[in-house]
Image 1: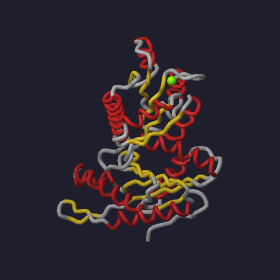
Image 2: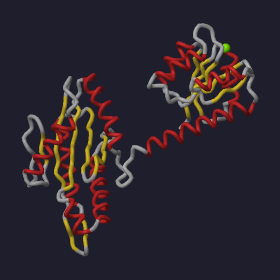
Image 3: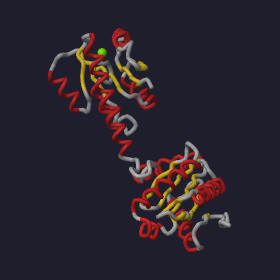
Image 4: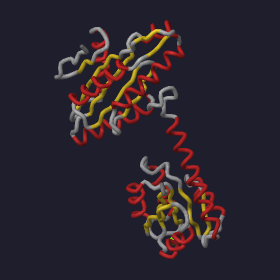
Length: 301
Ligand SMILES: [Mg+2]
């Protein structure tokens, strides 16, 4: 996919020059001609890289850089300063404000391209690393860190929109005894299989996570409690249908599920509600789905 680059510079000639210099790169270039418009464009476009002129009327590049670095929406976007001055002081100031690099105008034909490529490469690697840090190594699902981050965002979105946000919590039944009887390697295989069964039941917008140990959580944006209970039931069946062979014997693996839903300006206790329902599923005999709130329990046959 083409990278988005935002150029903020008061000179139309510089915009043309950048277009020419980066014409053959896999980038889409957006233009802003002053600092204020540039800031708004950066928040809206979420570019992969910003080329920022230092000398601009009203708000100069340094002031714009400070604003970009203090806004959570733009603080991680790399900035390359475009500077007309060859003064070392200006270059140091730009780098100290958080810019990743600078290019002196007029650009050397190859230099701008090389510096843009280097910045985009670093940006890509940083994103890859931060994504990897949020993936559970065993199952490939999102991990707890990702869930915590997104729970917060999804709760705010649900409060703003008034749409329901639901949560399914699942726990593998008798997992300790599976580990004790069949070994931890087998236990890991079970967790991978359970995760794969869950993933097949989820929609693209659902956030499926390994919560920890043998516990899983799925966040379902824009889904009422009935929809979440249906999903939990499908997840339960999907796991119960899979076959597991331990020491040449067929064994069955089941999961219990707790479901909860929030709508409107409610306190952020979605996980606790789902966890309480899961607790009831465990104490009600396992291999079943329990729903918090109005819905009565959906119990396995
Ligand atoms: Mg200028």
